[in-house]
Picture 1 (cartoon, rainbow, N blue to C red):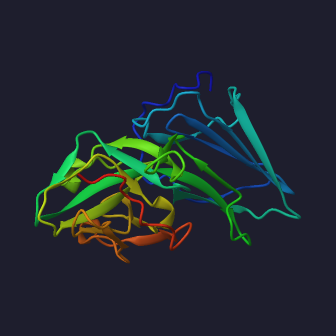
Picture 2: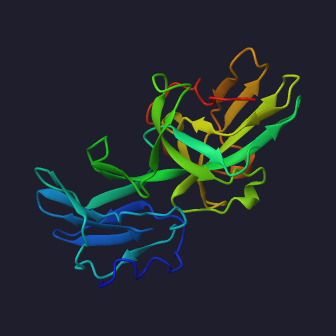
Amino acid sequence: MTQQHEHIDRTSPSLKWWGEHKFELNQAKAWQFGSLLFRLTRGINEWRLEYHRPQYQYDYEQNWHPISDTNFACPQPRKIERYMFKKTHDSFQLMPRLADRSVVIKPVDPIYIPAGQRGTLYISTPLWIAGFVEGQRDPLFDIPIIQPKDTWFGPDHRNGEICYATAVDGRTDINMLKPRAFRAVTPVEFHNTSSQQLRFDRMNVPAAALPLFYSESTHRLWTSQIKVIHEGSDRPPRIRIENRTPPLAGEVIYVHPPRSPGGALFNMFDSFF
């Protein structure tokens, strides 16, 4: 492979890029996930991961494909990680995971919920790629496919948390949200039981507290639904993670439990107007 970007615009065979792979001894397999070049090699006593992430990655780079010539020269900067084993097995699983921190969603346009109204907003958050081998509960590696930017979320510089930032088109119609290989859909259901119209400009999605599912019929990764009930400006909204995906997701397969179940959910909004 001579040019690092030569395959980026090729149409993906499928949005489902994860699964189990069988490796012969000393065999390498390689993929391009968006702009991330990724090569995995099985040795007799080690797994070797090598990847290249360009300085600038863009969220529209959602295509992927296997790379048939696994001997390509990996461009700089490249990262190499080696994992030692007494003896390696022939199977390796590449799996999607949600972000390891909360993700701050900033809708392109502010969203209003009139008094007494309810509605569901479908948003999406970026995915990580994790590598699992037989006999190990934790992944060997766990890296973002597209590295999101850091941001601070909180009422001031001393109270809050470091999160990831992503701009999204929050959609009220799921069909208007294009399925993307490296993002998962989270439905957020709002109930405004107060007497005032609400407006919010950004929302802190607790990605690490959400389970991950895959729906074959919709070709999407989904999380549980989040319910937000706003009862008045004198109290914070009540937030609940539902233990189900919405009916629109159809039948789903459980992919991953939450990274940190029961994480802090109370800080989803820094401003309701």
